[in-house]
Length: 330
Image (cartoon, rainbow, N blue to C red; front, side):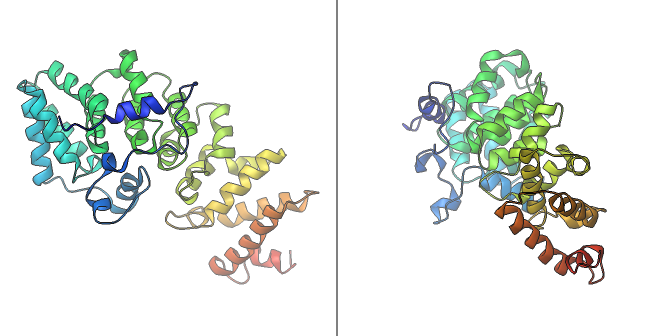
């Protein structure tokens, strides 16, 4: 053991009376320290996983020093030397990212399942999520648990739910939920609601609009993530069925939700937005038509109208319907 306090304990002690993690919670820097912030860079919780997923693409499946250390740790745990294995994972967590190596590790465990005792691997994973002192060590434990039927383990599920309230662990919580939990979309909605940064982005990307409650939440809150609304704009557009909503009579709250999503779609960076839709111009015209028949247009909506005008000048031909609209020609 390294003498540091477990991340599980930091999070558990920070919960309020309702069992929720305060929005401004953060771990002590030494628990999150990695090569990036040791070199003077500081990332928001969950940012490195988000950057790797959205910008770097799939990692190589070739072994490197960190992956060799991971495999050694699992073999050590399977042989019963859990303390030594724990130290190896904590060492790995100082310099690597679980999101890049998790598939390789899981495949390694599956390949050697005839010699790796499942009970020892499971016990080791539980130790990592409850006693790990570095975020990447906890993630490794969460990732390993995908191999087990955690849906039938209430205590494990409660631990995962608690950890997943923190943006840094929400993605791995999503993975576990999608590995076979009951009511998975309701569980993902809770992660989305309780996270306000990268965790919300990851949950929104993976949730299915399985109920009107989910669709409504995605419409009103889905793109509000404290990072960049564009990351979730396309997912919210489709899952909240904005295309269909623009054909209907909207409440003020629904119109505001459509406004948020359309504004985010016009960002076009880092994710494609309106330009990815075959009927993107028509979507913008339908939104403008609704505002044309709205008595009290808000200042924010006026700002979005101006953004649409500027977007049309940049992305559409001069004689497009959208540009004709702003010239008063249609």
